[in-house]
Length: 426
Ligand code: PMP
Figure 1 (tube, helix red, strand yellow):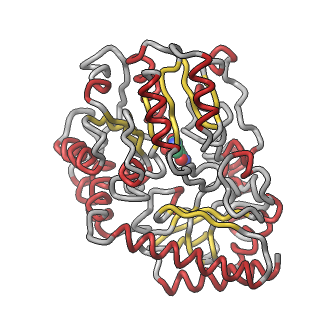
Figure 2: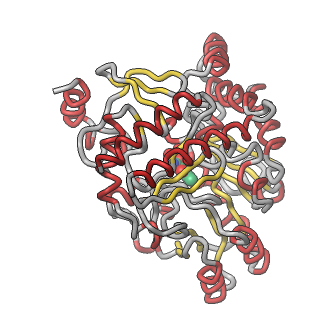
Figure 3: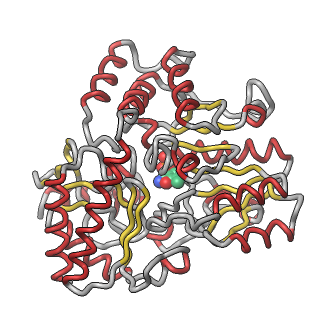
């Protein structure tokens, strides 16, 4: 028995399922989760000393790779001055200025501790602002685990095969409407059936929790137009895509301005941080300026802010996103060539440094229904074969992959060769 297996047995005694977040348990792929001891650059190291080239990046935050010296130095410096004050600090002001500079649609921003808090509060704010109760989301999109958002959700819920969680009162779930991603007609139909009831649309502008599905041409603009027509708030959940696909995130890449944006992952540089922001008139409804309540003991924590700010500063380097995009394209071209060589039906998707691998003979995968037609069993075998080759992919067929700035072309070549071996054995 290796040390990961031993630790997992021990973990199950006092931690539900042995993990502190469900997908980590490998339920989606079978087998025993790998316990990590450390990470550096593009690699993670397990408790048995094996090295893996990492394409999970802690589920998104590690766009610079692990243990980046600028972030480490900023954190250590912040720690010297105390861990938390529960009072305003200068670094929060700098962070807010930086976010508003990166994201043109964000005029005011509030820091929270996770993506879940960010989306939960953005929804509350949209409801408070419009005086309406219903929200519209897309099947297979995941926005964290707040009650009203765990309806037909993606990510871990799909992995567990429970797209909607028990424990959510039917009265709460009734306010959540679901439409099909990349299908504007399905959105219009819901608006037309209840033109005065929908407070907001929340959408992952690139869906990253049902594998990786880019928006079709005109989809995001269509959502903007429908929100304008029916006076609803448009929320881009950029917890995953924020600062990932471009410096200005999806809203800049696709040139569509949401009313509110939610952020997480990269904005914390690896520390627990989330944020939401947007139009000043909507944000003005938030306490203490307005009546919509939200608060947090550790919100804007100085150590977390120092880490996030150091991360964002690195993203300003000239050509940063072009290089990330080029590396990801290189990786996917290599993988596609291997799939062709071993005659495995596989399709890929990419937006910047974010990518998807689908076991299907379809040329393009555009919706949740199409994701569900892909070969999930093949993915399970592929995942374990990659793990043997020292390649760490997300342990679920329903997650996007991430390339970091720390991945070298040598590591990408090693990955392509390893994936080739995995595909040969499939
Ligand atoms: N929104 C999106 C798009 C996400 O991908 C996630 C997490 N994967 C969340 C919200 C929730 O963030 P957190 O896990 O930090 O609560």
